[in-house]
Image: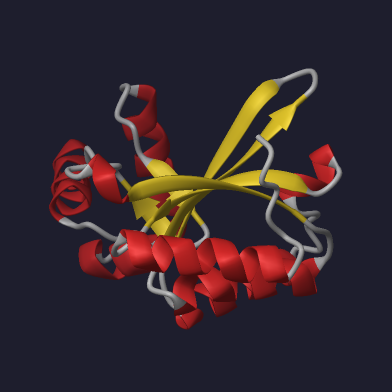
Length: 173
């Protein structure tokens, strides 16, 4: 049954466009969350690109329209600034796909975020604070890059303006 369950987990992950938590998968398959964690580890070991985000597991799908994907480079420090920056993005209708830092030794470090709503943001901030985790950007003095999906160019221009007004945007990159 283990391989059958893993195949079904893979079917679920391939059929959805948003992350799903280990707890949700555990309920679906009537097993513990730890069993799901083990199943995901086995699937990853088989070479399946399953990402774990603060919102759950997902398999990245090819981006259909690259015209709506942008990167922004920002710098700030502290949880309050992180929350403020991300609120600007999601309140304007952007989906925050990831955060990237360019580490001087390890090179590019990229972590999926998949934040598209205040609810997602609240869960993310809560997890960071509960874990007493340092933001990834603490490795680079606050500098970081976000890949975002935007609804249109007008919104992107407004996002840039708002980030610049807050002093978050790094323009000369």
